[in-house]
Image 1 (cartoon, one colour):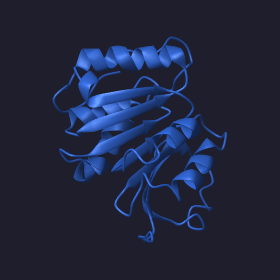
Image 2: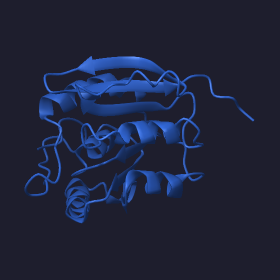
Image 3: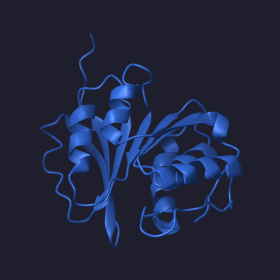
Length: 189
């Protein structure tokens, strides 16, 4: 696995041994970032949930994001993220949370409004729904926040409209898909 583009282009990233993570292929990552690039600015704050080895969040940093928060609950994967951040020299622009995603979201509440939230939970376990339910009422997202869910092609997303999301884009690949969402007009207080 490698960084595809940007300041850390071509640097190799480590992944945990075995089946601890499911790294996004270079081809899918390239397609994903072709879609994301209009949303990545020099002040973009990126949240990478279920980070695995950190490849997606690191790619965002390499392409110009200001900061990435990585959330991963597997200790071996967290060690990989930290090593990959040293290799790419993005440690200072990052924070790594060794936590499950919902606990991390509760801890992050009130600290940051994220521009892009990416999640790649274990497939077919329903984790994406619980995260989307939480984010629908969270102060860490606004109408501009882009939420991207990587999931299996069998994942049912029929519920997202009733949670208050609008689908910006849906991209299907051979084995998985990316769903791009925004919150529908959120009431301001």
